[in-house]
Image: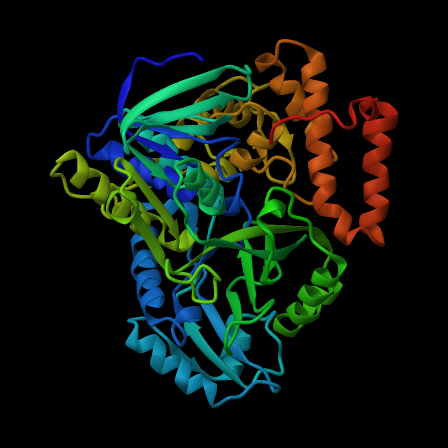
Length: 537
């Protein structure tokens, strides 16, 4: 066991948006903070949702508290995370098969929660959003938007580090260090080196999402969490410019979100066993449901190419007095295990939604500060994230620089300053990612492999799904790898990961393109010799 002699105030377990936000809040309040993630940032549910900046309208009728939290955080994130948000606005539409009377119930509930909800004429809805189903009989305009969870998470991690936090990826917590009913730190496995380590802190915060139930078990306490799996589809074009929702009680496949150059339809909801959460696969039946219902929102989806399918797991939490899980909550749950279980120095923050991550982080950090006798107010609601400060003029405005600005905001000035023609060359034409941006990501954003790079820059997320850009990206990353053999193994893992999402929708042109990709990488690149070798994602 390799000891670490640096004593932290707080260790945060989990590099999703909640953990990243909590690490930022802790660091901003002057706490010596360590953030630990077992794989890559946004690896779990954070990177597997539809990227919707909820107005709260979806929950207004069924959960007023969550709706109020959402609209408050919606307005906050538009200010402090500006470079992660696209202000699209949204429509809740009533179709002929829906109950138009529900529209009034919906609007009244929105207004009660403080959400702007304007009933508009269906003809006006069609003018605002030409892709919407033309048979609609009712429409309500609400302040939905889209948000990039990868950018949001990395901006929080980056700012936590700017405020003095340490952040480590591929460090998996294997056990908690407990001394006389107090958690004093964690034991971790460094997946890159295989070395076991120890880190010590006065307070440990469990922010591991659905995996938080397993972290709690290591401390001998129970958190009744139940995985709810949701499947989504990504289409190859941006069909809609506004978020389109069905104006009915929440159901499967009733949200279509514009996201950069594509659009996403979601989601389904099914309870799944805990032992399946590390390998989420989309079934043909789920694809059928998403397509059938999605076409009712925007008929153009029927003739739009599907890029890929993916699934994530929501961390639903049951009340302590209901181990059966019947009284499931989607609200924020912050557990002080000292008062709840007699285990000091341990906090669990879970439940909630990506939308409310900042509020969740504030709750957890408030409790940590109380335990540490720190009296400093939260400032995350008013302090912009790195990249979202007031705009500055960039030295040049190439297509690649403008695309990078959309991903990195004001931090793009560090990318755009190069005068090297090679640095300006494109690695990925679909998403306009330059060599300079790849180098910036490797130097500043915890990039260890191609999947990490995809989450930071969108390399391989465009219409070719890595077919043309993956080898270029691997070539640029060679400077970070000791041997070309390692790069080839990484490239094989990247292509296999892309195939995992294409496989459920592999018919017609998708299958033809998949066969072309296989020919390129197996026939010309010889990557089939790396099949089955594991590269951490």
